[in-house]
Length: 404
Ligand SMILES: Cc1cc2nc3c(=O)[nH]c(=O)nc-3n(C[C@H](O)[C@H](O)[C@H](O)COP(=O)(O)OP(=O)(O)OC[C@H]3O[C@@H](n4cnc5c(N)ncnc54)[C@H](O)[C@@H]3O)c2cc1C
Image 1 (cartoon, rainbow, N blue to C red):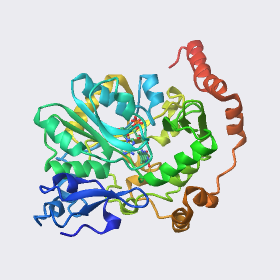
Image 2: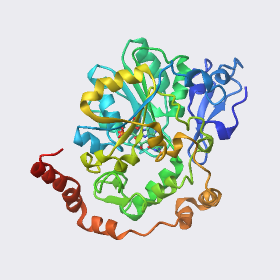
Image 3: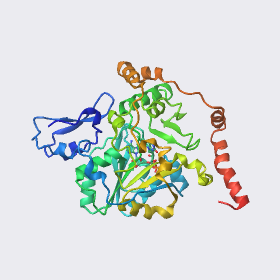
Image 4: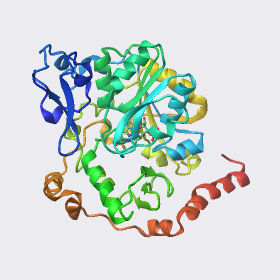
């Protein structure tokens, strides 16, 4: 059999999971992205992999009943959860609901070697591992097989991932219709290279940690707020914290320099979503009068696209603040809802420099913007000034005026 052309393969891994002969393994390329590799000696040429490949056959699972989707701006009322999540903490609320019902939640977590993998979480104690965005492609592992197994045991399952991973799961299962099965796709403008991230981590360890290994890494730390989010890495004795546009890896990610090739051709970059629920950032919330309730802790965009999605949204409704908004309001700040990310002109130059002499060579071509005066002030006063303006002052105002 032949695979789909490399630039369209999302690396979802459905082919490897379904192969009855175990003839397909997922191998990493030089950027750390996984692609299927077929062992011709084992392959029975049944073509089941081609028949289910979502990059070849996208249609069947994109169509969700005749449900008309609804869109919300929202955030969790649990301030701790809201702050520990990348956007408004809605994923955490959904996960808690499933876990309290003895269900299983799948999401992306770092392993002890700081590689990103999908894992199954069965308890509230483990949940923090899969909270927060990790901006690199997660290895799906044996998650599809585990989802199938748990569903056959009549367990409730919530699977979260990128739209291409959700598509891979539906393709592998052959159906999305199971009352115990819920899916979340995170709005994704592309997954960056795991190998570039690995080298970025080495760069931080050598330059800032005196060679110590990083133990924790947060792409969206909110110490200085949701809008001025920081990259935060920790080893046993050191801390690295940079505003998102001052961190080389985030800078290149947001400029789309090293996304997976298929992301520039993403078939899921549209308003019609594949999962029951889609979650993203609701960046436009400042244009609305409810911004005064948020205090820069993070706002989520929620798209409810099916009856299963409505079920889970209704179940968490009491725990969140939400307001219905138009999809057009979301598109303004999330262009990925209408078309895939563009290939930047610098991509070739940066990837060539990377393949010739690694990350330290590639970042010579990055032009990081200077700090604004406001941000300098924020960083000098740090946490206290930030809390004073974003939390203490609005709280005092509410107490004095009696308005919320
Ligand atoms: C690579 C990537 C690109 C993104 N691009 C955009 C964008 O352009 N616009 C936008 O509005 N939002 C984007 N997001 C989504 C956003 O960052 C938040 O993840 C989302 O809003 C959910 O936030 P939350 O507060 O509800 O929950 P959080 O707790 O912050 O989200 C955690 C969820 O994200 C999943 N997750 C984290 N990292 C990955 C990963 N690498 N692969 C698969 N699943 C992962 C976890 O499993 C969990 O389900 C992107 C996320 C990722 C990972």
